[in-house]
Length: 301
Image (tube, rainbow, N blue to C red; front, side, top):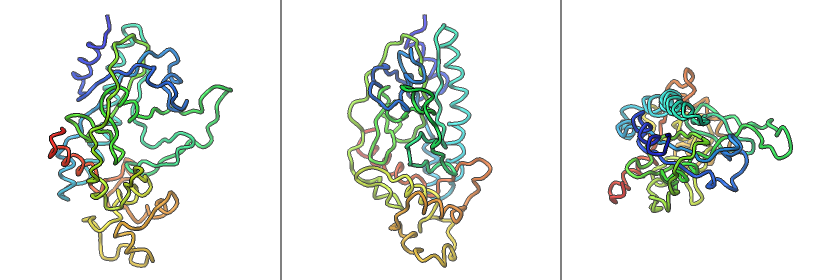
């Protein structure tokens, strides 16, 4: 008989570094466009799994030795290849036992209607502005889970000041997938509290001042993720030489919004991204690196 122990054992065999199961009741009250019950109305639980992103990929960026591998191996490969194979294998076990398994991987470039933020990891994001509910009481498609919230409900970790999920042992170096299922599995308790102690190391490390008291400005982050800062090792002397705001941009004091960030994107093509749509992380994920180092020094990981 299928049970939580079997699911967790198989998830780890297939490559998950952490796994937890949330009772579907944990999602009561969330927006319909984020609600797993709107995906599978008879769902009983949500299975969450985290994959480890190798620490050395971050170290190579921090030391300005290599940037491209993080975007390709640590982000694209895990989200588009490893995650899919993992979900198909784990989902098959669930469905072979007679239950439904709605597989949920990160779709990096889509945003639900009303979500005006962006994802700095990809060439651009697309808000589903033309989506309309098919009938009263139905959600506006596409339904996209809030991965960080779902991971917390699964007991995996909780979000820190920089907007990253932080998990025991893994810190912020992870990627997530989920399965919505009607299988009657024993559920875990939601993650209580957070490993983030609001030290501010992430905010201090960000070259674009994208992290404030109220969280992350994703458009600000996107411009500096792509390299609009002095610490960019690919920067040439003539970069933005005729731009009236050049010094403010390079110093990280320029404030970007959706329009101004997108306008600057063509100037931020330091490493090839067009073949895959994933942007090389030329800020080196300085926020995540600073967070990880702080947590290690404090003995919290």
